[in-house]
Length: 332
Figure (spheres, rainbow, N blue to C red):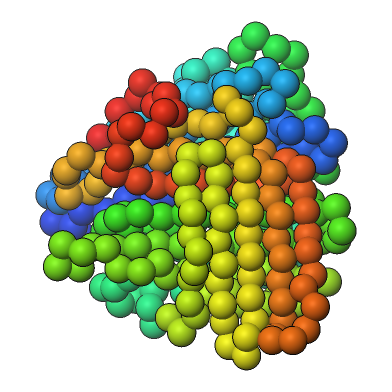
């Protein structure tokens, strides 16, 4: 399934959102970037585009955060999406191998590549064409290497040399009621291993469904699917400070994940719902500590992978009393 912008073909009457994003993290320190290019389209109205720039640095505490929203939104012939005006130095674009942008005094010029094929989180292709689930997601590059420059106000430009990360894409008519996104890379025990898993709960007849997980873990170039409708997600304990969870699959396979967000480093954003409502508060940290333990089948020893700052953790929620400051930028 070739990556392409979905908003350009959305019916006028439809409400939808879309995000094309990247995360990149330094190999030797807790320094990373999370850059999103998003579309927000209420029913019956034209889409608007936003550029979100977040730079995490554990040595400096709270992340740099800025957002630019504009009606200038296009699909370039050689890229996925362009938002704003490059000629005015306000906006950004992302293509299959590069990202360029300016936002709130920050600027970036990044090239990326990866040998891993696209990860489709949903287990069947027809689910990407069906009305349900209302959120679709893929990772065009679940494991990528980045090079280039990133400039943030108040500090010397940052040079990216062989940083690790990923490139993701999601879209839909409605956010999940509650979600967790996990990505892990740069593990000490196996440098080419990675984890990319999304978990969600939705409202049905006023009640939250159990957690459903979809994604994969790659070990030594061998990709193992995680989750699915037949998998059981157990022992989920999620807060803005991190999470712990267990996913039990076929044959007694188990995946245990533990994530810890360094104090004061989380970014807080507000995501609007395409059809209105109060929206979600979203906490993200892309320099999180992560530990992954995988058991291939019952009775077999577990294999554990750890990274001191190669984890990404995102929690989407309805509550407002989570204690993380929300950036002062709207999402409509």
